[in-house]
Length: 166
Image 1: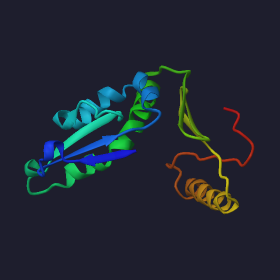
Image 2 (image 1 turned 90 degrees about the vertical axis):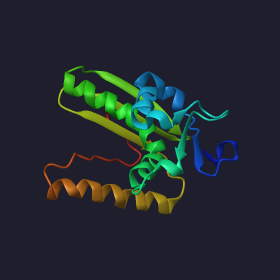
Image 3 (image 1 turned 90 degrees about the horizontal axis):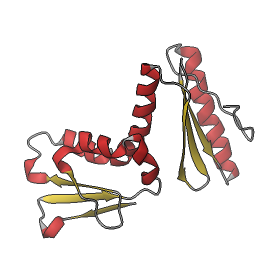
């Protein structure tokens, strides 16, 4: 859930607040530190009812505002990034057998596990519409097929109804 406003009516500033129900689950994985690193002075105390808030000063963006705009647009993505950064760093350092479970939506859960030679990420998704099931299968098959064309691509496995062994 996003909330955009002009703090104290200042039209040169845009305040962007984000509320995600799983934010507290990301805190042990360094989300607050990642937000500080990515947003620096833009990061302010969260607006009431939200988990993270940034303020973009439109007058200070300069001639090429693209970097600032992309940072602001990546707010939700960067929340997820904290979890992935932690697990990829642990795998590089050889810290193995760590797991996390994140329920990021109703009926949708992310499982992540670090092993010596890989990081396994499992997205458990429930499609309630038959058309969505078909689209999901086609989409995942396309991901899987990329591996045949590019051996450097990460391995993608998917199953329908049958949960993975991991």
